[in-house]
Length: 116
Image (cartoon, rainbow, N blue to C red; front, side, top):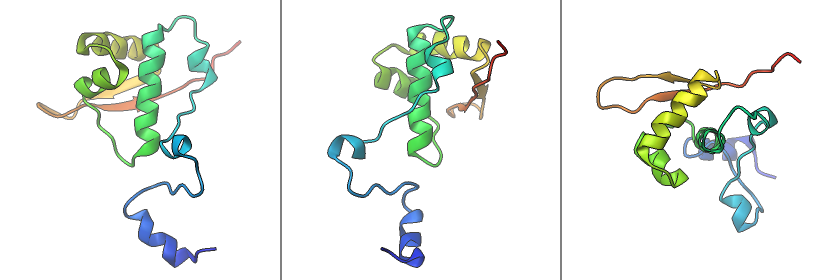
């Protein structure tokens, strides 16, 4: 077992330490809330983009993915990403905070518990 002081040296470089994981697990995985997966009003693209944004957020301390990166990582076009972000925003699963001209947006992921 490592001492806390020894672990602190890693905290500056990464926010998660994987020990003894197989190569697939070490590459990371993302859990998606069931309320997203089961929302029949969301398109498949919206579920994938939300999942991708979650994967960026969980695997890094700060992530500001551009629309081009989202499009490349999801295998879609930038135009599809723009439509999908609008869809997620209108469904109140996502808020977009603009950082300024020439800078990527900050995406605030939300999930809400719906009254039954």
